[in-house]
Image (cartoon, rainbow, N blue to C red; front, side, top):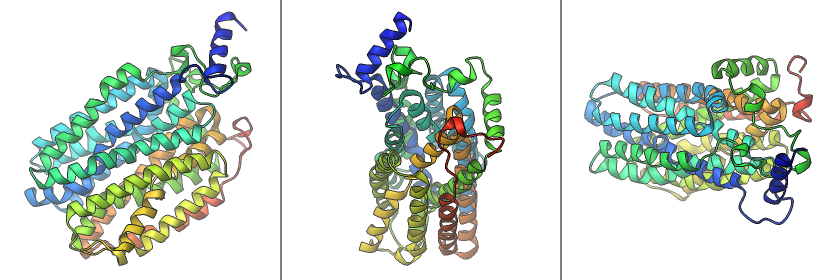
Length: 448
């Protein structure tokens, strides 16, 4: 081992849990900044459900039109993710993250100028969709896989909770601003939240442990020369990001596990971002509940989402992620099945129980899904998770527009809730039957 590498390994031994700790490992600083970036990017996640009714009242646009804008956003949110993962390998995590936050801020700020329905498709759909897609949950997987050797599940859980924290921070304020002085001020708040994080990202979000002369957190010194490092070392610094993403998709598409994860995650997206995230507040409004009250309930979902996702990350490090996924999906299905009975003008105790359970389960699926991607696909795991997340957002987009069309056609959302409950049962069965791979090295796409 060369002297510089030995020095790096010795430092990593002290900082990665192998000896007395003299200072915080840089991986935790990176994770903290990544968490704040996800909080800043999550502002728009809280917006459509709150702003839909005010926009309808001012412009007379139908639920279907506004749902289409959300669907475009969700599709781009998903399809951008695998390419964003590859771009992070090519240009670095910091540059891609800062650019994504600027896109979100610009799209949110320009929304205040819209007066035609096609313009909301451009701002909500195109600009914010590209920005949020580059800051999708694959960002959390990339940070965890690049900077951490141990506690990856826990780190992914914490970072995923950043999106929930963003919802928790922004949602009540967006709801209040949408009421008075109006939805335009709420849009400006989202823009400010995204742009405020950019300086922190540029200053503190390092691209890899090598940038600061350490090994990933938890890496053993003996593994310094053989450790599976960040995917950038596999793809090469000059690799074309689009080609890399498509090559990974071609390899992953030959593995049945990929299609099982994609199917389950599509249902996950349909029942979270697509349905509850977009249509819970309008549905509660249909039952006479004030929008601010319904927004407060979604904020409570965000609170328990933080706890549930971090707990799911901890569990993923210790238990079979396939079993966890099956349990999560089935509990979610039961909640959606009873939701039509709980909606009322007044908040009943049963609704609080639903909100708590649904919050704990909201994105608890992310750590076990990312873990299976890493286990099955090794160094390609982050980009594969990007494609699986694309399926998540395609499911969300389909549910968002389908539920809006059902609302316009029937005057209520009941069929949407029941259909989503049935899909969750399907996802639970699919997840429970996913094959187990003993290590990334043993996963052979051509023969699996």
